Length: 175
Image 1 (cartoon, helix red, strand yellow):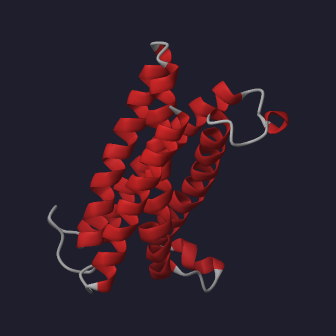
Image 2 (cartoon, rainbow, N blue to C red):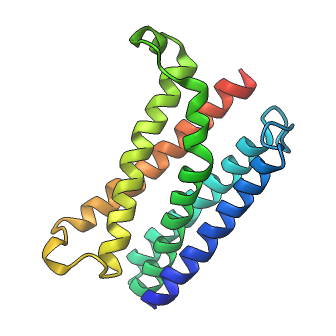
């Protein structure tokens, strides 16, 4: 099951990467999106992030139901999908909010976007660590003892990032 989780996660992450790179290469990233006010790449990212948070929350319920192998596969896949979204879509979007000085943070769009990015970075790192640990890729001596608490905090982080993603989308495209 560990191999299945990692293979499935890699395949989906590669699909996300190919989708994003294809959209950017075709010059369609800034095209009108399908949700209305946003651009295509932002709309795709928003929809995939909604699916991601639903998928990770479903994984929480799998763990609570004692279906640990299913939980492992589910969480591994979604964390890898998230890593691809971050690497191939979200990082490049930070170019729109480069900070020249601390005064730039007075703009709501800028500070909300950077808060979203900061919490997102912490969440991605925690999620990847947990996936590495639960699939025994990290040697046992480096496993965290309070991993259940880290799992809960990481899921809360994913939800916080998702909610901030909605706010960011609203500030950039609606408001």
